[in-house]
Image (cartoon, rainbow, N blue to C red; front, top):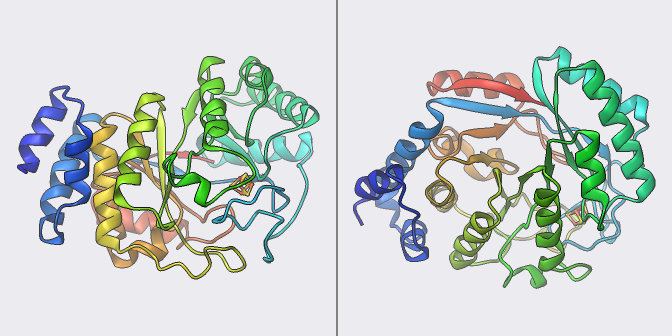
Length: 325
Ligand code: SF4
């Protein structure tokens, strides 16, 4: 495959095929730099050299009844994740104030839960209305599976973007989760979009799937027309069924990121959880495909920290664009 030629065609509007996507993830390691260079040309065409920097905020932690095999927030597994219920409206407002004062343009509220109760939706909506009245912030919410009518309420209150990951392909999903289905997740993303919110929706690499599953996930996300794709790498959590999984090789992860860039040329493709642990010294290379990353840790694990990330961006020649907190 001539990777530069493929990049030219994608820049000209070609939507790559599953076969082309598979050839990216199947490329030999000796072609990694050529693949990343081609992905970078597509990334630079749409996003320049800018990197959107995100910070995660937990609004409810460690109390989820679902059994997702990769997640330390499930109550089914023994773990030492901090547990607390839904934050009050005041705490959510305080978080928004801090994010605003830090220069954030987006405030994101995340709860570890199967889905919100109607009371929780009301609390989030109340907080969102007050945030919108007081601060010039976009609001993102990640509250789990949405019931009919909940997406509309959130959108009406002013939530701009809804995060809900599909995690993996429809084929592999039942190997990881028994308490809800892949279709449940797709339905929530569809509801969020139909209600008028943008969708932030991605997955995790390294959960025993094969490369066809990466391609399948990328194409499902393209069909759903999501606006933002976080790509996580499994950082096995003690106490979860995947705690002894072998991490994927950094080269494979970088080719997966390049494939997501080719399938989603103009979308916000984010290198997310597991970046430090799985990519190690190859972390900066991820930004040749991704145009966005998390700093300052993830929901249940810590990262290398904001200042190290800022140095990494600067030394690699990228420019931090905005902070989403
Ligand atoms: S539904 Fe979300 S928070 Fe709950 S176990 Fe699954 S991934 Fe974790």
